[in-house]
Length: 269
Image (cartoon, rainbow, N blue to C red; front, side, top):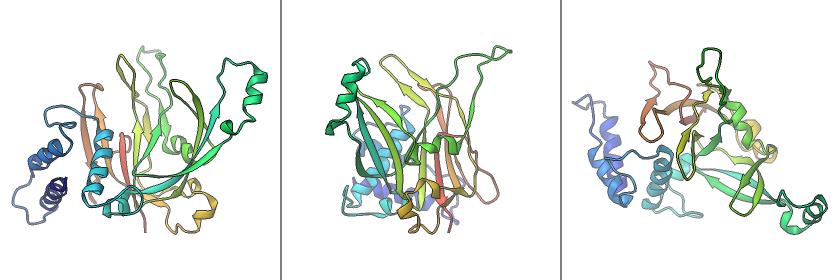
């Protein structure tokens, strides 16, 4: 697995070398290391899911550098890892009589529980895309502000999660913000038959995104800086099964696009 670290380091040094003779850099050796270290779960000749790759890549780098899940940190966790509280409450089956539901809600099993968890990125859920058309018979592409879908992490917003047998209400509250924060906007919905892409545009301010209100009150004082600027953006174009990805990286003479699928924002000192 350390081959992945070596090849990634070589690629970054070539990419940002100010004395590089060529105007382009080949990532071929890096990609070969990805294929090998992922045991061919990610391949050069096959389109993969960008979020799946990002999750695997960050964890693979962390592990290869000697990091562990709980105790030993690495530069990967120092840069990208934050923490949150997850509150979970089990729900009675919706078909049960009201009296039986009320009795079950008194049981310990149905009381809200809280666990502390770390994260490398935050998944943001989009509202369901509308199925109706406008007067020109074109599908309407809705727009939502970033802070609307960030409400998931305000500690109060509850969302129902369904499994094969049970339903749960969950809410999330951030307790630690990393220096670099990654948002993954969940555009794809998978079922047994097909993959559907949600085209909703997320309006994203590219500077001074303040996340202080999403931190629990007792930890706000420990975060002197809670504002972020957008520095990178990954956009998926086309259909889910045959589309492609484009990446925008902020340069001081240009402006990044604010409506993609994966957003990397840097804390402002």
